[in-house]
Every structure is written in C-alpha cells, then in structure tokens.
Image 1 (tube, rainbow, N blue to C red):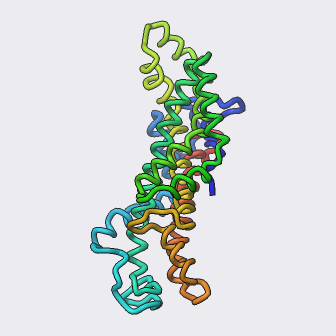
Image 2: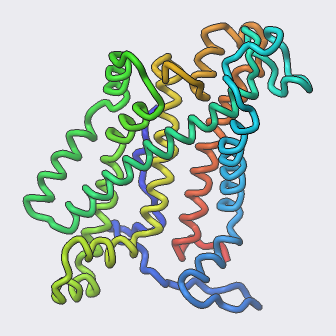
Image 3: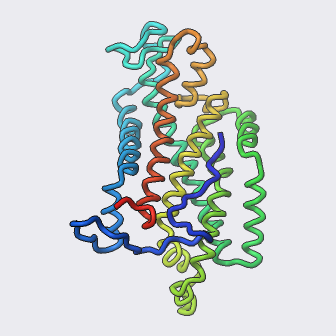
Length: 316
C-alpha cells in the first residue's frame, strides 16, 4: 500500500487555482443566508451528511484510542484467559491463540495507529508545505532545485526504502516508523501546494504586500497560506490516512515495532498463527475493520469537506 497520489480538489480549478474565498452559494429557499465566511462554512458543514458521518466515526475511534488504554491499564499482550476463546461477556473480542485479550490489544492498537498517522502525516505535511510554498513563491533557481529534490524523492520506491530501513534497525518503535513514513510521503503534497502557490502569488493582494515591503515569510504565512487553509487541511487528512496504511503494511509483514502492539501487528500475529484456518475470526476482523474504519472515515470526511469548501459542489 502506498500513500495517495491524488490531491484534494475542493480548491483546485482547471489550472490548480484555489477557489475564491468568500464565494457564496445560494441558500435554500426560506432560509436566511449566512453572513461571513466562517458562518457560511459552518452553515454548509452541519448540513453535509458525508462530513458528519466521517467525523462521527473518526471521533468515536479517536476517543476509544485516547480513553480506552487508560481504562484497560496493563500489558495488552499479557495472558489473561483460556486460549482461542470466542467473544464473551468476559472477553468482548475473544482471546488469541495464547489467551491474550483481543479487545485490550485492539484498544491499545488504535492508539498506536493514530500515533503513526498523526506524526507521519504531520511531518509529511510540514515538509510538503515548506517545500511547496518556497518553490511556488520564490520561483527561479530555488524552484528548480526544490523541484529536482521533490522528483528524486517522488520516484524512489518509498515502501521498499522503508522495508530496508526497518529491516536493519535493531530496535524499532512507532515513533521511528512514523518519522520515516513522514520523510518519504511529502512529495505529492509539495507539488500540489506549489501549484496553488504559483497561482496565489500573482494575485493583487500578494503584489500589494510585496510592494509594501513585507518579508517573504510573512507574505506566505499571512497572505497565501490563509487563502489555502481548507486545501492544506484536506491535504493533511490524505497524508494522515496514507501514513496509517503504510504503517499497517509494515506491521503486517513483520517490520512493525519490536515492542507494544498495533492493529497491523495484530493482523500479522493472526496470519502467523493461522487464525483464518482455525476459524478465529475475532482475532483478525477487529484490527482489519479498525484500519478500514479510520482510513475510510478520513476519506469520507475529505469528500465532505471538498463539498463544503467548493461552492460548485455544495448541496443546498
């Protein structure tokens, strides 16, 4: 599995131009038109079923990841019951081939999965924004150098590089895994942000700021980035989901953390001990469903946000 190579379309026009902020779609008949950009965005956000559904699933899983380990203190890999027991009142998700509680592993695995997604996606987003903004605004030789760097990283087989690095690490941790994922996942985001910046740097408000003597950094952070805020947020969502998928892939093939537990490691253990052939569906279904639910909710949220931020796609 690889990181998504598509980019959010909510603010991209035919030439990669950001949607004009403040554009107002007609309000439904009999409803008062919302005033202000924020009020307008909220007005359509609370009426978008995709966004609300994705946000509800994501929030539920996130709360489980944050609160669950506090309620289920202890080692999730501890042997707490009889082996290979199906779900019951005592063990909600049953037990593994070794008598470990699957629900405890699932809850702790959710936290690990969110950790990899947030850190890996965050690192990729920061690098992508720095490279994309700098290349798009400065242009010239700076743009050429950063474009060359982006293309080099883009054509590298990221998963293969991660496989080699993880294979030669004596002790692997979730944080190290997330950092490597972030360092190899940013090129497509940098190229997308660069395209948006190239468009915005030619706008009148950017020219006015430049003529006023405002520094490059302030122009990027105060003039260009705010006009791309929705686009940047949706880019981070895609990077978040991509980091989770890559992390789960590494875990599943046995190159996950050497200590602890994750949803990908649960799938790896279930596959190693023939859970499918033994009919122990409760061992591999929860982690697989958890990964699918997290990534699926992120992409559904992204589609909903696209419809909210893009006036042409809004459901009135």
